[in-house]
Image 1 (cartoon, protein in one colour):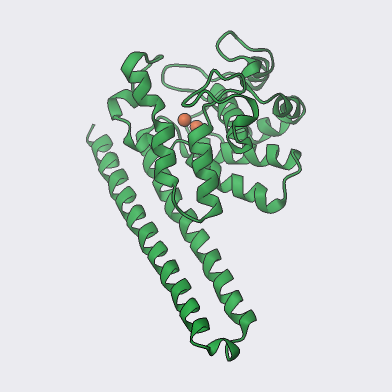
Image 2: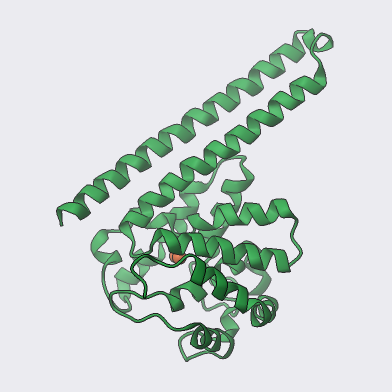
Length: 269
Ligand SMILES: [Fe+2]
Ligand SMILES: [Fe+2]
C-alpha cells in the first residue's frame, strides 16, 4: 500500500517534471527560430553561411526530438506505474509495430518513428483513478466510459507540438482501441478512417495482452493467441483487425513469438 502510494507520488512528480521540460524545450525552440529570423532580417544573412545555419537548425530539431522522446518516455513510465502493464509489455509492443511497419514497406525512419511512438499508447491512463485501473473483469456503465477516456486524455496530453514523434504518438493514443469493423472506441471509426499507426498498435497490443499473464488470468501460448486473432473467440473477432495486417501477421507471427520470448516479463514463467 505504502509502496503503491510512493509509486503514485513518484509518477505524478515525474509527470510534472516531464511537462515542465517539454514546455521549456518548446520555449527554447521558439526563441532559436526567432533569433534566426531576426539575424536573417537584419541583413546578416550574407555573412552567415546558410548551410551552417540550416545545419544548426537541423541539429537543434533533432536534439529537440530526442528530448521529446526522453520526456515522453518518462511520462509513459509514470503511466506504467499506475497500470498493470509492465515495462516489458511496452518494449515488446514497440518491436511488434516495427515488424509490421517493415513488412508494410515503410522507410527505416518511419519504422523507427512508430517504434518510439508506440510505447505511449496508454499514457492517458495517468488520469484514470487507481481503483478503476485495478478493478478486475469487464467494466460497465460510467466506469467503462471513464476507462475508455484514456484514449482522449492521452491524445490531448500529446497534442500541439510540431514533433512528428509526438504527432504519431497522439494519433496512436487516440485510435489504438478502434476496430476495423467500427465496434471500437472512442469514435467508432471504420476501416481506413483509422490511421494505419493506430491499426498497427491495436494488433500488436492485442497479441501481447492475450499472451500476458495477469493476476486474474493466465497468458495464452503463442499458437492459441494466433488462433484467437486469426479465427476469433467470440470476444476478439478477425473483423476487428485491418485485413491486410492480418495477412501479414499470418506469416510474421513467428517474429512476434521471438520478440515475446526475448523480452519476457521478469515474473513470467
Ligand atoms: Fe489503451
Ligand atoms: Fe498496452
